Image (spheres, protein in one colour):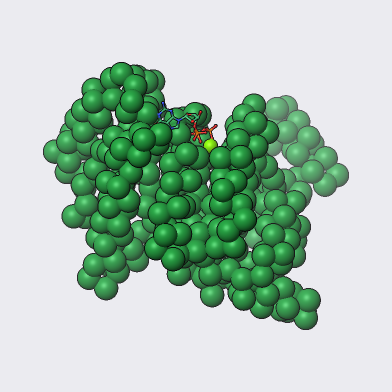
Length: 324
Ligand SMILES: Nc1nc2c(ncn2[C@@H]2O[C@H](COP(=O)(O)OP(=O)(O)OP(=O)(O)O)[C@@H](O)[C@H]2O)c(=O)[nH]1
Ligand SMILES: [Mg+2]
């Protein structure tokens, strides 16, 4: 590793904000040296606790994140916040909004806030989010909050990188409940019904409870943790104490028995990450190979004209790729 990289790594590990910010920008811009630096940092990470906060646009994720930041700061912990926004129509506004709402933490040296909206080539939003989380971890942040708008597969993947996943809904959004059913119920460690000052919060909470019970009865649970459903009002603070306690409780469960459940969870995450990396890299290499000399066009034509069959062509490509 060259000296500049080594120096950058040391700075980041010492908590240097400018060096960390530069690496995060490089991750965003898909600069090759970002990976080199992440390689070096990786073995010095894994200490931070990653909290994922997800939910539909506007349910109050940033507002809740903000209260969690305050609570962690009050305990003397350093905090990193990653606001991920994969939905381009919202990005500018929502990110600006995040900044404004978190402004009271902006001058606090113990808090590092970063927004991510690219669908860059780093391996997708999930990969760049992981990269940014690694940087914050390397900086020595104790708690890393990852806020993401929960609508598609990207978010489900991002949610899966957390040690504790909080899913936020608001009263009366039947669609939300449907979305949860469809994809992320199994990913939730804590469910929050925010905006309990609105009508129907109790009913929404009951619906969620019902879904969790159904899952429990189907034997889906793997550990001693049953995801609680907590009603909150970010305005008057109702339920926030309970939410903080739930987070601490979930952490205790994962850390019990020599961190058994935490290790299991992180192992599953590592497996997914590795497979994704291999997939991304393989596809990238394959595409480069096939674009060369319009090979793909040529082969497709051969297949279309039935001069060649797709099976042997595929096998040929695979073996030449492995040899390359
Ligand atoms: N009535 C009510 N409004 C709330 C509550 N919590 C947040 N809000 C408001 O809901 C709006 C959206 O809050 P955000 O925290 O920005 O929500 P978000 O989920 O981060 O939004 P995006 O990042 O844009 O998806 C803001 O106007 C908040 O002030 C609450 O408990 N009750
Ligand atoms: Mg937000």
